[in-house]
Amino acid sequence: MIGALRMCSRVAVVRPVMSANSAVFAARPLHTSHAVMDESLEQASKFIGAGCATVGVAGSGAGIGTVFGSLVEGYARNPSLKTQLFSYCVLGFALSEAMGRFCLMIAFLILFAL
Image (cartoon, rainbow, N blue to C red; front, side):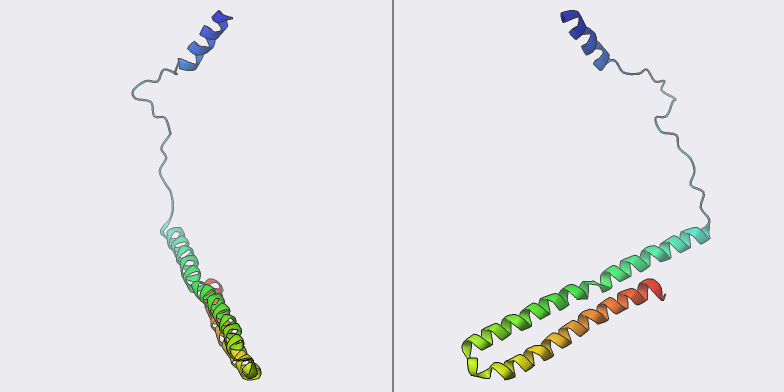
């Protein structure tokens, strides 16, 4: 039993012998043309631009939450203004939603039309 333990510990410690001149990873040159590099750079910049354009969608969601939160607060303060508050709420929702859709539209234009 002790002999097997010693043999296992020796095997775990032993490392392969490598010469000083041998490389661990083989290095190979990168062969790409300028057209491929330009195309991949253009594609990457499209993705970055579309990602930046979709940030406005999060603002739209926050705006919609604020509009309906204000509706609840206004209705709690003065229930007799229910119809007027609701019409303002629908208008605010529509404007906030439109801004989110415009941001999304710009992102799709960047991705697919440019």
